[in-house]
Image 1 (spheres, rainbow over the protein chains, first blue to last red):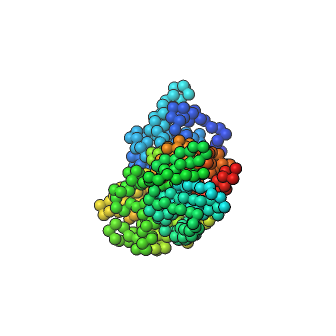
Image 2 (cartoon, rainbow over the protein chains, first blue to last red):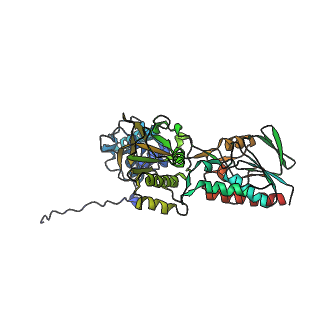
Image 3 (cartoon, helix red, strand yellow):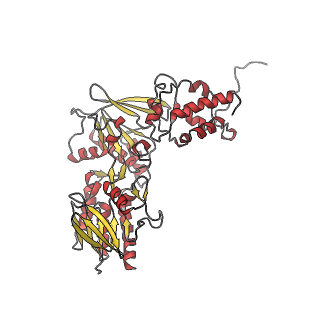
Length: 114
Length: 340
């Protein structure tokens, strides 16, 4: 077949109907405070990793709540678990524990436990 | 005319309006105010949103309204105890005891003490001021400068200081600070046309008539910038200017910025008097220590004690219009109660 240089792109929309909530449900069960984020961005502003890397913990959490978890594993490893995000969160969310549990959930998926 | 007596605790705008209106119904009123003069928090403000009307107009209007032989005012007085026996109240005030057929609690709010948000630097860095400080500076009509007397090139307004903040102990929204910030940004711009002004917010809650229009005017006419992101921390530079860290959440990137002045939009907390009375009388509380009305929709001015009513910001954050309307609504309930 002749190659015209075009390819079919996967759709960009957030697909709420096909929601893979395994990681989200696991994290919410372990750290229910994750539910009450108001996306103020304090965590990202103070994040030690965000200043040098393309890493946004608020956005990562938001995408997870939308069922988008592509590249989560690669992204979450940028976190150094310093915990500054937890200190500044005005809603008192234990963001550090959220990250820890995302990592645990990813391991469990790898081991077919979720 | 009636010989029934009402004690109003708190001489802010709610207490003043209720006193004026109750006296028109023929009751005898005593207003008890802990400060030396009436007017409460409104008396400390320079201009009011959304019309930029002078706050003294409100105070003058209410002062005229309570200039009435049926209204007696006790300033510099504190309520020590309120007891109810056989349907009548005894109010102990700074050594004296007053009898009353009904009591109206209008003890209002205090501004959040911004020093409690240490990471914002109020009381630590010279160029971090509060919204109340800015009103005082507007009042004096002196030029607005940084601590060393120079014209600020950039000013940052920080929304939600002490509001929506679990760590400050206040999870509720103080609701009037959003539009106060927009109002103050415009006033500052009018005085400092060359200064860049940037507001950092979580959500802009422009709920009242004319609020959204003021926000639009701030953008359209005055070039005020808005960044959707809450201040994470502020630090001082060698030259006394400040370094701000926030996330620009709409672009999804961390943002750092140098600014010459920071204005913290302090939220509302139940006043010391509101907290003390609530505790003393065992009244139900909500949103921290604001007073809980008996019914949210239908009995918004009744408390759990019969004959004891509530009005104004002692039940939660309110605008001036809402406070005055609420005071009038309390008057209707008190009048119904006393006529029974």
